Image 1 (tube, rainbow, N blue to C red):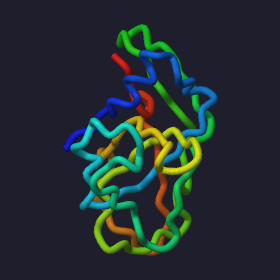
Image 2: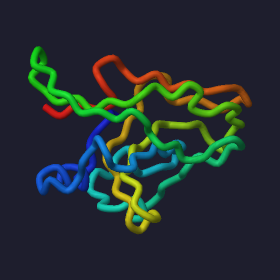
Image 3: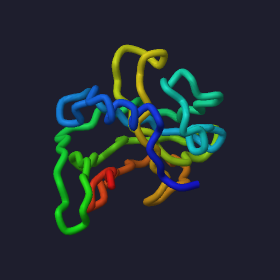
Image 4: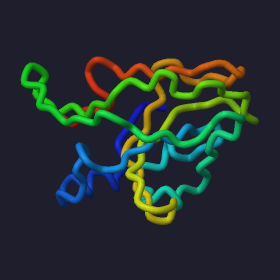
Length: 147
């Protein structure tokens, strides 16, 4: 599949209900049985038919830091960026399936309220945890773009 925005994120942008600079944004690592790679219509994280969150040792959801939203005049788009996560996980053990990608969510309280923003499955996916460190280097063009 390809990286994409969820409908809930588009709705939040249209209503100006989300400030990417100050919201509590988190990364959720998902395995190969997830429907997040194809279900763009889920309004909350709890609404996915199958979330299939990573179940290997050393995993927990990670809060983004250093979020910034900037206009890229050369490419005529807005870029949402954050600090690299090194390590993203210090010692990620094998899960029952490979990690297929990650979802960025707006954390509110729990998955019934948390909002899916975008899905990313490029830059080294799929992979299996092997007990070692996993680093996430954010693309120089930002974590996500709005065109």
